[in-house]
Length: 526
Image 1: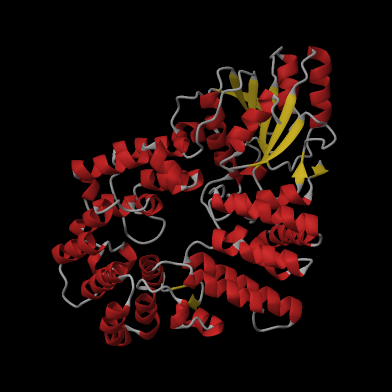
Image 2 (image 1 turned 120 degrees about the vertical axis):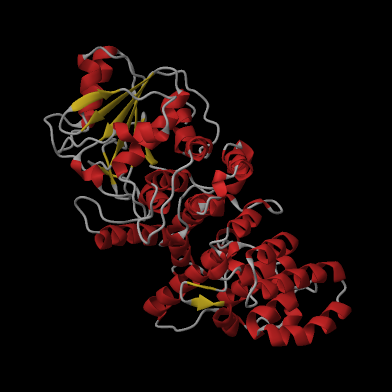
């Protein structure tokens, strides 16, 4: 095996996170990833490349979770090699920390890293200014929604943060932002005292009125004795979201219908996350509501605009089809139309991929080491590989699929399969790992292949021929300058592709850009 550069390992980490692998405990794997991040932080050029990676992954929704991105950004802020580099990292905060949950997680990382690196308990002036700007740059309505929807996360609250950055009322926009902050920080009494004064004095009374309506709705829905019908009316009138409601109202179908369909509708990710609940209470048994959900999940523009990651859709689909939760007593009878719509949404989440017109062989590593879960999910690397392969299989006209471990078997994967059918194809365990088998199989059986795509953790040791040697043998025997793309399904630093070979490429598994980059590579555009 070869070691990939730090930049490629960091990309794997940003996409896949870090966790237990077959041969390495989670803490050790995480340590290696963090060392790769710090390696990039040690030079100005590496730091600049790291920031571009972070921003690309975060802004374009290429990863299922933001946690690795925020951890890497915190490292770039604290361990930047120069003041200018640290300043550039601070400028990325607004792009990457889009909601308070992100901001609070980032602040936790920066605080702990600062203490470890500088024995400092506080933040620098630049960090305080950046956090302050996060609040002061928002409109009144946007700030009101953020501070009431996400009151506290990750052990932080808005009160904690604002106590450290000293955002004064005069620094907030005169469009209801001051009212929103008064309500969130000082409570309903202080808000009521300032409401009339600030409303009359504002230069933008319409925006202030919008904030007042939102806060009025939040206050009203939290009152004791509010019925489901009254809550549904308040949701429709004031644009409330689930986080604004007391838990006593979250078993009412009328409430969920209002959350689902009022205004522009429930955000895509929230809708997907709550499909099981809405089915359990009978809401998706109503044709109107089921039609709404199916229409949203099969709308390519809506999927693209939401930036929901396909891994989340895959997890939601598998959980929904099980009919019961991992914890608690919630159970439901899955709606077939919703299952089919989740399948369509998964494929749409990767965007449009241009066919290559090349002869492709997709090789799925189904060895024992691929049975470990993708970090933070219940999906194994083996299953995730099959789901990724389906996207390419559905795009390419000439594509064969094989599964390998210590032995190899052809797989009957077709592009028109559902995701569940494709994932079930990989439910086999061939023990050891011989990554040379796909090339040797193609050579022995006279299969013409322009590009081999191997989905693996690269933790290979079994077999008498090295994968790169097998590739060279195939090229020499067939006269085809076959390419090799290795899709890394864990965030280690290993690859079976020779970095000195210009016709090989390393990609990160479950990166939403992987199918398109793979297509460009096969076409010779990289």
